[in-house]
Length: 416
Image (cartoon, rainbow, N blue to C red; front, top):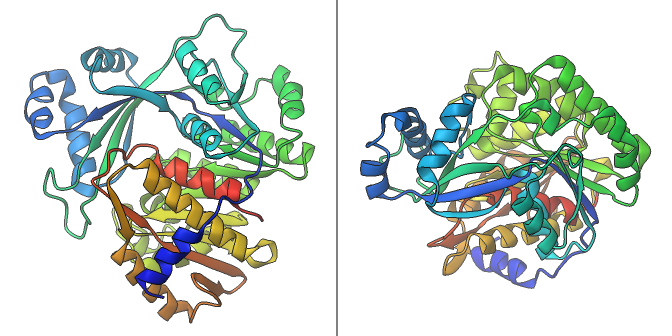
């Protein structure tokens, strides 16, 4: 397929049927801070307290990866928030918060957000978007809004590492949340089960805040309880870029096997594969895998974690891996195209085009797995690979939250 064919497919996509959905659990505010040369060379150098933040930001920029620093020192993080108060702009944040507001605007008419101790400004944003809120911490006084710092940087501001494709991205500094931000209190289980009874999709996130094996096991039991109480419910887990071995093992051993679907980028997939197949040198945590290896790794992750569906988003192309016995590939292709277009629009910019690296990746996957059974759909030993080149937005104005917008949109538009 050539560029014009993909452009036609994108143009002809109409609003698919969007499933009523639950989102949870991490909801906060983001302070979006544009990174400029002046910001790098003055604001971050003038204060010694920002030295580690600057170092981590530069590493993210050199690798063009969406890294997040979970700041364990609360006093230090409060100092960060004071330093950057009044800088940039504030918006809804957290994977669940971003997904909730976007999905409501995209046309999901019945949307429930489950969260813990939501602050007043955060709650107002959700309410104004038409999102119903089940606040599991609403009885614990008057919670304040929690703000994460999101540093958005353009491509080419600093030299990138070898093999890295320069692209706009972001670096996030956030406070560490406790396990109570993800786990249901025992006395809330009945309310949760009742609230989710009419939904068939749950887009869940925040499990990176769990630390012990017991906490991960408890979270997995709660996911299974959601599904048991509502046999139409399909649960999606959205991953983040954490390098903590214990957290990744908790995802692999407990969270993903309890779920149906997951979403992640290429760096998060490599971290997952490094844990699933630690002896394989291809999955070194700093490695950059070519398209065929990423797709093969996605299939392996699906098989080893017992997932029905895996959504990989990377530069230039998006991939769904679906178990054949559960797939409706024509619907999934539409869902992926619709989500890709939504993410490009959310990025802003003044024009879009089909990604050339994405077109090349499709050719490579076709050579490895054989010709597509239909445009963008390949067959692979019990699984279907659904792959589209991305719409690249030029001169974008936003990079934060695009992965959450993409994953949540494709999930609620899919049928499996």
